[in-house]
Image 1 (cartoon, one colour):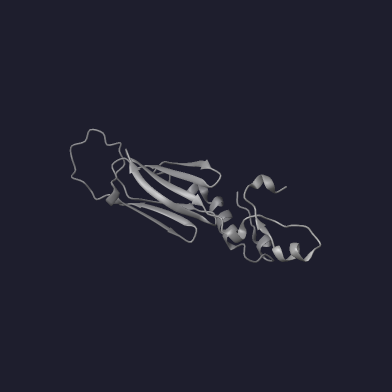
Image 2 (cartoon, rainbow, N blue to C red):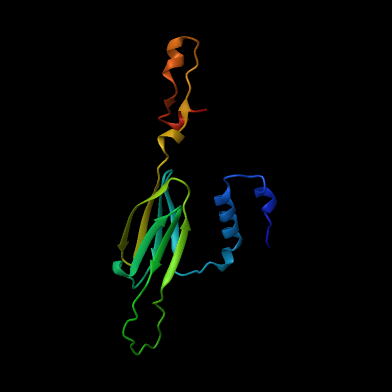
Length: 156
């Protein structure tokens, strides 16, 4: 089932990223299933992506983050062919892409027991954080300007 969202974007400006995300979601069946992965929400601003990469080492992997897209590539050099009775461990190259929201940055990546853990953090710029506005009529209040909110519970 395909949806034509063109009418929504004819009069919208700056929603190109949304159009791309909807288009990608529409093609989700074409996404490869290898390697398997988990996406975990650690807390409100921290996330972890874990990929199961049995047989891959640090030198076989490349992680790049560019324009809200995190790309993990794995290229395994062909090892010496043995006389396998059954070969169930995948030894193929892959490329997995993840769309990141605005202001989500990669903090770290580490490999442990065949699992690649990628730590992500949402860093909201100071200018985009909620602010409280003082209400008053005297000149002192007007010149103060807005204050940054420390806790979200302060904002109703």
